[in-house]
Length: 261
Image (cartoon, rainbow, N blue to C red; front, top):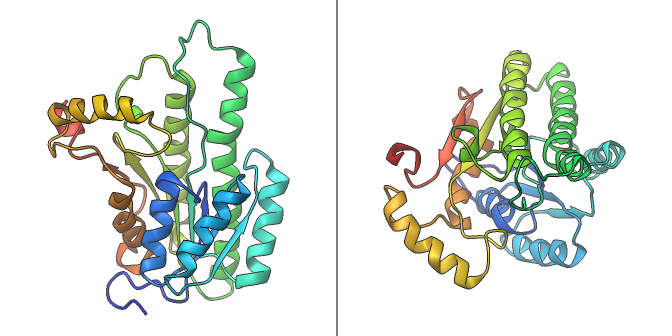
């Protein structure tokens, strides 16, 4: 089993949208360090595949079909985690639909609210109920825990055509900072991981990826796109006790895109 600075043996992580893309990258990083993983996502087939892959690393894995826009589904899912695993140590609010590019002038109110129901409200429910479980554990004499939200470079720069997406990421960042201030007394930290351009199933077709790859050669300080594997280390670090004095931060994983602006 894993040992060392990032050892997660005996710890349990809940990851929304953890059956593919960045979420699966986060899950792999935690599992490789010995942490048990709980994946909440809507696609049962992908859940099963992710579970099989992660269990091969020698950790306990559970999956559940959860629509994070439903507060009650989140509450019920946490109850199942506590019943099965007895604890929650890390929460990664990663679930979110791929945003279609659309002008602020043509984005319908209905589409705007539907997107925020998942990307913003769902993230809040996930983080809040995870914090509730961590605070209860801390009050029983075992402080600590890590709340992590998946952000975006749109938190720092304008993003034309995706106002709903950029707005949700900025709001989640504010929620995380507030939770860092509120729950630090319990040893619970809260941080954002903000990816740059990452090659996942959400970022386009093979032809589109090829064009974007070439674009990244000049836009990133490290001249390549990011990959799911680039998120294994940051997940393990933020979930581990090695990050116990880091809270309220937004950590960019972007190949240096921000320094090249």
